[in-house]
Image (tube, rainbow, N blue to C red):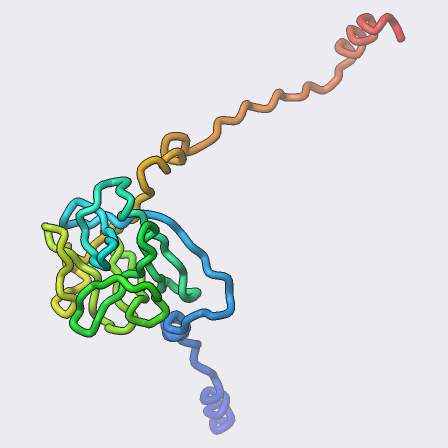
Length: 203
């Protein structure tokens, strides 16, 4: 009997590691599904300005709110949180080279042009490069790109906030539509039936 009990105990399967599964699947590029795009600005915590992609393929964090080069189009790359970030005005993708420098590229299909969005406890977002894990998009107080090999997730230079461009804040001005309250329907009583009969001429 003890032997049977021990065999039953060994047959119990361990629970699946969903965190490992999600991590592995998030690293795969989705080539089949229709890509979702969003348009917003990335506000730099250190420079107090917005990330922008210029015509000379340079990337900095000196864009004013609503500036044409600060408007970014963000494409989903997987069912996880991996994205490609492109300047709407220039069409260049923000990528990272092997020296940890941010550059603009016309074609952004490589892993060096993919970033993982990480929402931090302070509600800021960090952007880790998919090819160079542990390297983050980061800017100095003057808005200059910081060398990615010297970045860490907890550093202020790597913290960003998503913002809608100026002129697209109607949803903030009217967060809810005020709907009129429905008029309650009162049940017919003998009295209301009698008054309704008199108004209708006894018909």
